[in-house]
Length: 393
Image 1 (spheres, rainbow, N blue to C red):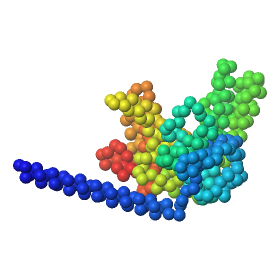
Image 2: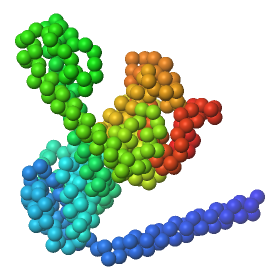
Image 3: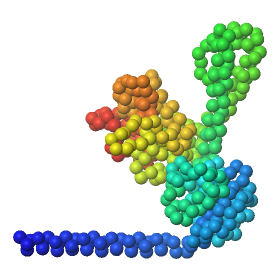
Image 4: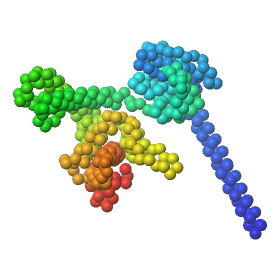
């Protein structure tokens, strides 16, 4: 019995020794890989920049984490050039915001290693003393110690950003028209009258002769503005269609889904930028903020709202497509059946949960179609006896 025990001990020791040797080997390989990657990429300083609308604050640390210089400069291209153009290659952390896309591009052009920090995920920000100078110092210290703590994000390229400017301008026009339409209808209703039902783009054509003259005088300028906005939105729509057909032909495969038009397909391609951005199509749901928040502790698993992270306009467009898919004009499909099944469970928010679920599934399906170029089959899973999305998605 002792003999067998000794043999088992020897085997266990050999196994532990092998595991230890493998660990050392992996660490040595990682060290060589790191040294190879960093060859010629020596970093001289560690800098944190907190870009403000008018003024940006900065803090520069050396390798020993000593503060060398701190101060501020105008948030302009000239201001950034004046401070960082001739500087030895450094590691710089910026806080994401309105100015972070162009400032990060500018700093990278000057040869610096740039990280764009995501403050929503960063820890340790609950400080009783908070100001731009301290924020810049904190960014500098974190980019020196561990850049992963910044949860760095990647900005899109210049061309997709320009395309999204067009879509966001259109979205602003639509929002302005919606406010005017709601204003006109509310004002008419407050006098005991009611305008006929019509879509937002046709309200300016409504015959106002049935209303009192005082209302006509007050509301006609608003109706004129609605008409002008409608014409501008139509021009934007023509440009969206042109871009989809000429500059982004890959949107054609996304438009196979009924409920996904030129606008949604183009916005999706510009927002994601590349199908290779995600290794799994299912990662698009969390990226666009269409999955529930999580705050589990012990046996407590509360049901929370969706995270609403990522691009707000893209999320809104996906929700609009989901409404169409679940609406009276939506075709029979796996997406529609999935949403209706959730809505049938009832409850106060049954329909709302169904819409969000379909929007998330749609985001996943769009990425899968973009990635593979497959022909879309609305009832692919139902025919195969599976009610969920394609297994490959």
